[in-house]
Length: 290
Image 1: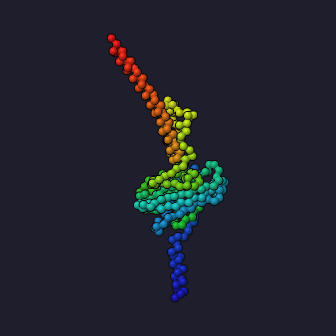
Image 2: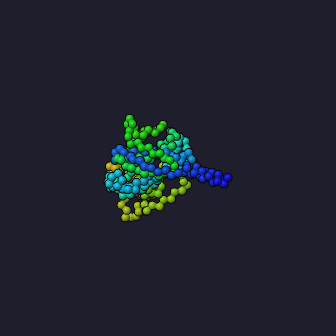
């Protein structure tokens, strides 16, 4: 009886641990070297109500070609699967030394289950015969789509067609979660308080030595550049985003400059009003003369 119990316990441990077994493997993305192709990964943790952890790595900078580059990336994700409200994808991307033209391997990612239950995310990876090694806590079963079928690389079931990328999406960089940041959020953030500590503030506008730009100068600048001085253009914002602290400082600077212009305009207005009063008196006196 004791022997049976021992075998039963061992069998139970093996059975319960099998769902958490680490999986490893490798795959190669072909196609053109300067393009990033969709590779889908299964959300193996979904059936177990767990988060899937996927690690992508390239230790050898000379793998596939001289100085192709190194990569260490970790993705944690839980797919939407046509209705789950707890879906997310977080990424930590770090790359080692690489020579031009190679500077990155990952161009973007997306949950590919907005209208299906395939439990697959999409990661765009550099092609050109680049090999990637993966480790995961659940089965991820990578599928590479580097060859088009009828012009389509990957057809998201019930969703859009996905082709290759030629550049990185705005939220992607070569070192960490987000360039010089500690986190990146794809969904809105709700908070009762947000404290930002900028490097400086805009009170220098009120310094007597500050050269306040004239309205004529501002008008000329706007005609040429289509935006205010010191304020980033629409293209810059789309490419780089904005620094909240720096943008608030800049906007306050514009408010302070506008305030100084309004004060000056108000002085001019009051002076004109006084001159008008004098002129009215003179006109009235002229009318009274015989």
